[in-house]
Amino acid sequence: MRHEEGTVAMDADVIVVGAGLAGLVAASELTSRGRRVALVDQENAANLGGQAFWSFGGLFLVDSPEQRRLGIKDSLDLAWNDWQGSAGFDRVDDEDSWAVRWARAYVEFAAGEKRAWLETHGIKFLPTVGWAERGDLRADGHGNSVPRFHIAWGTGTGVVEPFVRYAKQAARDGLLTFHHRHQVDELVIEDGSARGVRGTVLAEDNSPRGVASNRDRLGEFELTAKAVVVTTGGIGANHDIVRRHWPERLGTPPTDMVTGVPAYVDGRMLDISAQAGVRLVNRDRMWHYTEGLQNWDPIWPGHGIRILPGPSSMWFDALGRRLPDPCLPGYDTLGTLKHLRTDPDIAGYDHSWFILTQKIIEKEFALSGSEQNPDITSKDRAGFLKERVLGKGAPGPVAAFLRHGADFVTAPNLEQLVEKMNQLTDKALLDAATVRRQIEARDLQIANPYSKDSQVQGIRNARRYIGDRLGRVATPHRILDPAAGPLIGVKLHILTRKTLGGIQTDLDSRALGADGTPIEGLYAAGEVAGFGGGGVHGYNALEGTFLGGCLFSGRTAGRAAARQTA
Image 1: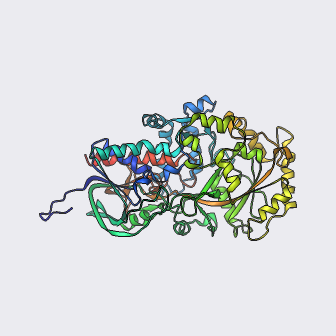
Image 2: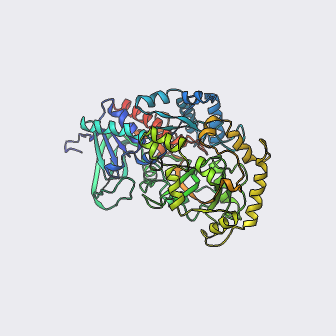
Image 3: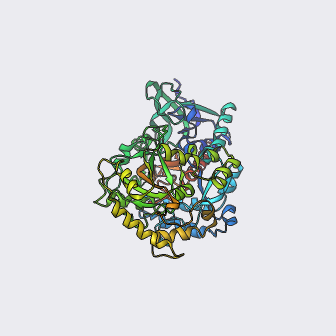
């Protein structure tokens, strides 16, 4: 508030805009150093932790004890080679100039203190390590050479929990003030320095976590501080922004997509930051999944769930043609998206298909999201063993989708399955004979422990890793083997998720202006900053890097803002 004599009384030392994971981590770093924080968010208190609360809780670690126990030989050099091959940084003199430095710092963090730092916050991991985003089949290309996807006990909910606890304790100690239902509309920049925020006070809304809330205006507010940290997330729920920045290299954006994040992931603060003179970079880089399902029990509008597939399902396009490698389940997310959206024969369709067996779904299907993994989210080790190791049949949430999901059909034979699959589209696009010919050709490759089929090679390669063999990859078998049935068809949708670009920041998370120099007192972290530097992932992500990016960049921003306001 400004007083008549011209002095300025600050409402806080630092304003943190956005109460997701990156914002909570930044706030923790600040309050632990005695700084007074105003934590501002457009949602109610039930949504503390933001999108991260709903995540599966995967974290990218390099050369971890879990990896070593499983016989995985990982190293900083191998991880950095994978990261560079995936990122494909090609704007290093401009938009990638800070991103590539953030990338190196993050991989060093993942190979160094990350796991120990997480343990200080009580975060522990499942003993198995997942092999996500296996890549484009090139040693110097995209993908993880080895399994690195470490799942936190508690999923994303458990990763968020300690930082929520710290924030509530800081509020009780008088160091943090929550400003829920406060929507920031403007960053206040005076004489080249961040001085606060202005915005709209929204009407009270007691909706449960994740449910879309009202945007009814009650009034206006202004807060002042010595520094501002922007941590407001990405664009995944705003399909208009997704389509606006959809890159030509990925073809045409789908007409219909399912939404992998709550409605408040709206991307507003990106344009608001740009209006304040902040430099946005790499907005054409984004991360959307091709294995999305319509949630039969939705929480937010258009709620989609991603299948985390093992490698054995056969993948067909809308016309019933098997996808070429590396468009294989669990391999190359954006490569598959590009194929589906740029092939002129199928770009007019917004779906593709998995065909699999009951034996495959029982072993290989997992669903992303904390609510889809209640045993892990609740840290129920006995339940985990009973459900996932000792149990028979598909995990409970997967079985529920099989019973209730609009995208699942089952049948005892292929002709009946294709007939049911055709009933899920406006026109009957699939020919059973064509599909059968491709499946039979694949099935002929199963008889030997070696094969010329790249997918069958991948299945056998995966089973050489004990984690996949025991809990993730079904024993190779013929898709048309009646003993493995019934057959299952799954209609797959494009699921929106992440922006990989955003506010360009230096290695102290300071937001850069249009001229490339830092704006005094303004910081950015998390997805709004492309998880650091305006695009730490480059063009592709290795998975387990989104939560980790929020943690690392939020920590960096909080520490830097604390130094500035000392």
